[in-house]
Image 1 (cartoon, rainbow, N blue to C red):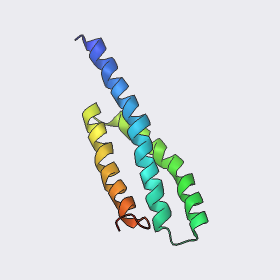
Image 2 (image 1 turned 180 degrees about the vertical axis):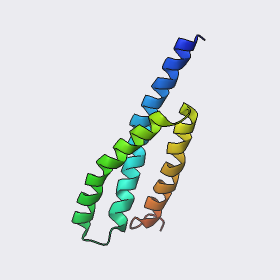
Image 3 (image 1 turned 90 degrees about the vertical axis):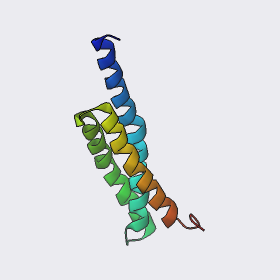
Image 4 (image 1 turned 90 degrees about the horizontal axis):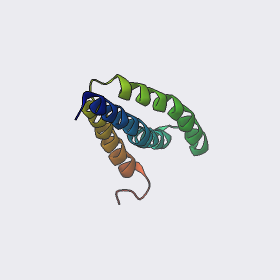
Length: 96
């Protein structure tokens, strides 16, 4: 495989990580924040949704500054698993 092809695959992998895993991570963070904020639920959802835009931008920036595509994927999937588990445990009827 040529170096140009390898480079393009690494960039494509980072784009996929930023779009798919970044969206999932941001979504999980938004849900968890909405569950944890000690304000009325409607305001918590609104606040966490507005904050999710900044989180997603930070995730995309982080994916492209990571040393390798593998590190970017691992750096997204591990927190995603933790946040998803916490969301599942905290949602009403989640772990029941």
